[in-house]
Amino acid sequence: MINFKELAKEYKTPLYVYDLDYMTSQYNELKGAFKGKKSLLAYAVKANSNLSIVKHFADLGAGADCVSIGEVRRAFLAGIPSYKIIFSGVGKSDDEIREAIEKDILYINVESEAELRRVELIAKELGTTCRISIRVNPNIDPKTHPYISTGLHDNKFGVDLNSAKRMYIFANNSENLEPVGIHFHIGSQLTELTPIREAAEIVADLIRSLSTIKIELKFFDIGGGLGVKYDNETTILPYDYAQAIFSTLTALDITIVCEPGRFLTANAGYFLTKVLYEKQNGNKKFVVVDGAMNDLLRPALYKAYHKIEAITDSTSQMRKVDIVGPVCESGDFFAKDYMLPELAHNDLLVIHSAGAYGFGMGSNYNTRGRSAEIAIKDGQDKLIRRRETFEDLVALELEFLQN
Ligand SMILES: *Cc1c(COP(=O)(O)O)cnc(C)c1O
Image 1 (cartoon, rainbow, N blue to C red):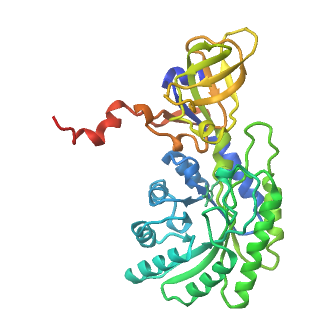
Image 2 (cartoon, helix red, strand yellow):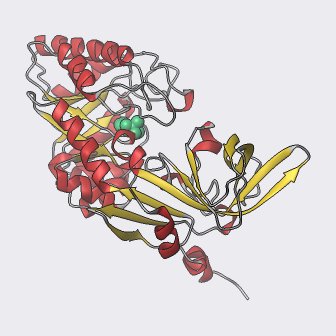
């Protein structure tokens, strides 16, 4: 059991706490599910990009799925070898593409015909060949929140099957491109297996059809997206997931690349915030806390549910409250109509499932410094990012201040 009260006392609030041992067990469970086939788990760095977290996965043998050159640089800093790094995303700048090619990463996931031509041109300028994979949009409804759905033609991601085939032929004929993989990622927080299996079948069929024209791919990149329990969702078991993927790959000798983010980190993370005070507006009861949407945006952005646990001596009855932060936005809440007992100044709230898309989506809105982050491993806690100070926040502006 993590002693949240002690941690809050030592490191102050608001505070992110990550359980690295939980991350390890999630990693091992998923990696184990793919045993019997060649596989690479490329951690989706955007889920939680703290260098110590990325390094933790590097030490476990993971690769990295990156969506900006900044994330690629993080992956390198954290010790992930170049041959395990993938660069994805719909809009890569020339500078980003150039650096990715120079760093000789595993492959670039290309998301449009125009991008394929840019990659070719830049590889040519550099006098080299770039390994690429093409992100296919299989037009499958993943049945998740529309903001995190990515596998429909309505979404900006990937290319349709016909374009993909054209692009493979183009790449195969180019001296500066080497097509090595195929990629799909239909959405995040997926809780149903059927859409994933359908997408995998479509993409596996394309691999077979490319093989008949002598384009042999080495990597079947199934993206990330495995859902986790925030509340009482039923989730996909890693074993069933892997078996569903295997079932689409009969007679194909290919390395499976999986890009989990949320699955590895979400439920390893907790966000700690203290009660400032309670207030009542008419019939509505509010608990005002010291954390805010600039620390944990998911409730404001997606109306996401997070379980909230109160650490208090209160023995009062439970009542319905809105838990809100100090930021000047009505969207600044962690929960609405949530059942909690009466709370006192400095009581602690533990917001669960905050390890993915938590700190990383944070901002300095309202000139609030971002929280500290700590990691727990083998029962030992350790600071992995210090709290931002006011000086940190103004540093990039101060030198331009005119008298
Ligand atoms: C965001 C993203 C992931 C990770 O998604 P999770 O739902 O966190 O597993 C994997 N691959 C790509 C291309 C992504 O954009």
